[in-house]
Length: 213
Image (cartoon, rainbow, N blue to C red; front, side, top):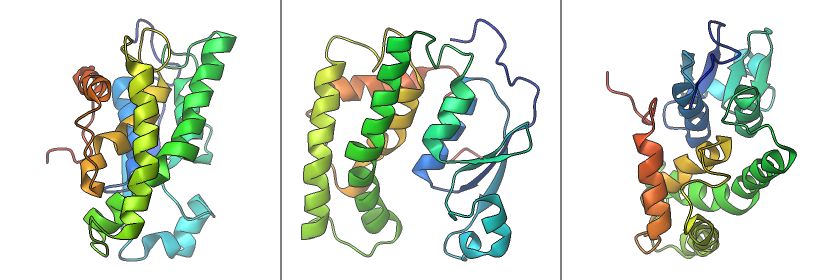
């Protein structure tokens, strides 16, 4: 997947994240797949780290992930970071149509997919303030299952979301799809998604959410 050196190879990259952030995991996955070493600066939401003025200097929106680029600028928003990291590599195809298709899936992840998967996970699994069968959680999953059905149908007969090789679109959609069970989802009927998740895990450089000590 990386026949030529990455344009950022050898340049310093620093990631501000939290331990279990799915959005930050996207960036760590990208760096792993692209062979880019990255220094993590991990913050604690429970301790209020993101509300401090020190963190606001990294990202005034007080969200992770934020990437310190070799240009010395802190770059916010996971999709923007993926696009930045993917430029000049096979992970962001050069063709006009292919790039538009990648952008379409990035938009899909943000508008149709992410919140429906992330919110149940956050409230049921991480904060433990909701139950699997709470009406609000069922409502989120109803939305998320529609998104999963669209993904599964699209992946029928293909290995990846755009073209014949993985792109940043696949990276963007992997984390919250792979963690769906933590929000009470059962995606077992979506066999094409299951095979796609396995392919993503098998790629060289795959980085788990929690790395072994």
